[in-house]
Amino acid sequence: MNREENLTGILAQYGAELRFEDLPDEVVEHAKLLILDTVGVGLWGSTLAWGDMVARLVRDFGSAQEASLWGTSYRASPPDAALANGTFCHGFELDDIHKNALIHAGAVTVVPTLAVAHERYVGKAVSGSEFITAVVAGCEIGARVGLISGLAQLKQGFHAAAMTGVFCSSAAVARALKVPAEQFIHALSLGASQAAGLMAAQHGAMVKRMHLGRSAQSGVYAGLLAQRGFTGIDNVLDAPYGGYLSAFGLNADIPAVKKSLRKDHETLNIGFKPYSSCAGTHTSIDAVLHLMRQHPEIHHDTVERVDITMATVNKDHVGWRYEPAGLTAAQMNLGYCVAVALRHGNVFVESFTPQAINDKDAVALAHRVVTHTSGDYDQMGLEGRYAVHVQITLKNGQLFSAERTHAKGSYKHPLSKQEVVTKFERLAASVFPKERVDAIFRLTDQLQDAENVGDLDTMLSKKLL
Image (cartoon, rainbow, N blue to C red; front, side, top):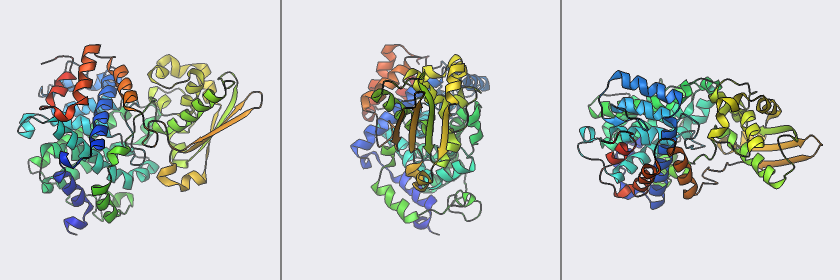
């Protein structure tokens, strides 16, 4: 199979040839929002216990003091910085989501690219436009792999965002390093061979937070090794035995993928979260909040029962009975998130304190949220993955219902630029004073004009150089 018929080669050729001038203005603007949102959630994640554990571990390694660990005074080698910052970004279920590709793109494109954007590795300062191009390359290539394989991985119990994330990170780093197509192929392959992540982590383990940190780190290793001539499986996606897709029993529609790379921009389908919980809970939260606004009689004290019908894959993901088992379990659980929405009218960082996730009244209300599956939603495939029908029964017998297919913040119902900026400002203020927060926003808002993206890396450190 020649490179034109080889999916690995097609994706690598695209990534190696992509130029900033190829990107429509709307893609550039959306990529800048992705960068801003990622920085905000990463700064918030740096304040959390698991983020601090990884940061201190990296510090104790004593690796090269090159890239910042966001929101801290530490610096580290690019792979170690990617591990820590990627963990920060996935640390509180606040990061972006591409619903159909099942990726959280920022942690595995913005993080590893910024980590390697140093003259030592690239040969000169990396401009803002080159940084944006690398991020988009990672989003576009990773999204194609996710569209083909992500849902199947999730059904098998793999953390698809982490598994696919290595393609995002490897592609972004390879593009930042400007490696030729042949080395780009090996960067993708070296990333793929490091793919890992098990979904059982959602029931309470800290390790879920680190999955994307490892994906980001793997991309750094893959790109830098490929740059040095280290080789991988040159048809890693296509190999009939032991290839990435054959291992999952999948076949790619290569002509469709090849056509879409030049025609469609999956970067535009990346959404930003208004709630700090698993994306699979968001349509239900939207429906509940909508019903509460329409019917003031709906209140947590008046609710007898909430019935939520959804696709089987989403019920498996978030629709299990809630029992307090730590922050991860609460953020991944539909019953708890609906209970919080009913009790407080929002689901954000304050909803997941140790006191909140163990509150006996919240737990009792969560147990009155009953989930069901729908064959109709199952048949919708990726389009119906988050579709829900929500019915609220009050203690007086009144019934209220609403249906949602796409959540607020998704590409179908996007947040405005100002909503993303406000979210960033709120999260970044947990680490930096307003002057620094404003400066970070100004830099990212005009990032295409920046001569050296290393200025952003420096700005994300508590210890300015």
